[in-house]
Length: 50
Image (cartoon, rainbow, N blue to C red; front, side, top):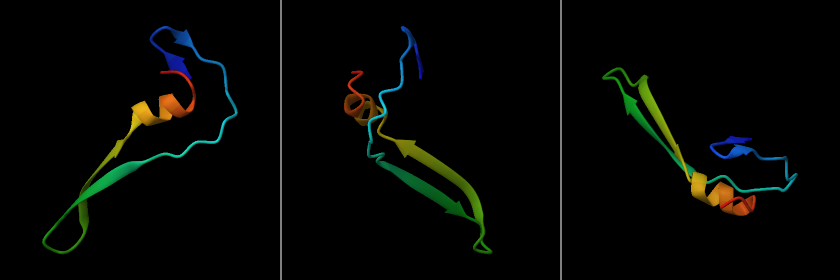
């Protein structure tokens, strides 16, 4: 993983990725837009990086 301070070696740890997905639909019911947000801080903490 490339971080601002350099490359972080693999930890081979299992982690849980939490996030949310928001969809915007057209009048016909089709997906027009999707936005995904993830808790990056939680991932870094689980990997022991933060």
